[in-house]
Length: 183
Image 1 (tube, rainbow, N blue to C red):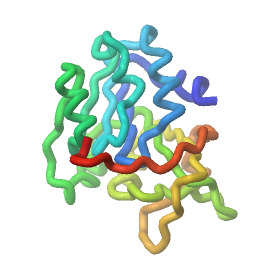
Image 2 (spheres, rainbow, N blue to C red):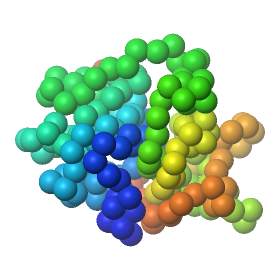
Image 3 (tube, rainbow, N blue to C red):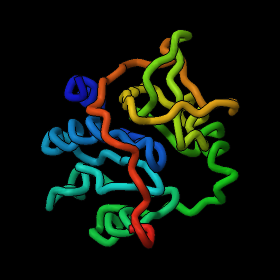
């Protein structure tokens, strides 16, 4: 369950929610439910499409700190709340940040497509730097969303079940659209 998977996060951990449409939904709710058990959990994401549950509580910043690689309107609202930061970078260099060890990842939580017959999950619409991020992660948790489309033809756009620590069946929310004006 998402609650069982969220128990892998410890105080002081770096948790990566990945990018854009791949932010976890059920895992985010489960991590937010553990708020009062945790301190100094640093959560990284970017181009955030909806307000994460971990950022909704009045005292969320006492437990979680949001780090955004690239700010959407949602990321800016989290930063304005006083619990987040923008980490400037050149997008093309982002995979290297993970490969070089400059971006630590204790726990990765990512939405993926259902597994194919070869044991692979697709990163769907937000492949970007995810292969390098997941290679750097100590623990990889995938949240399956049947509504995410499989993306073909790219290298580094899938993860095999043998490289995953936990699989959580999500509630299959629709793919998030970017709001008008990036809100």
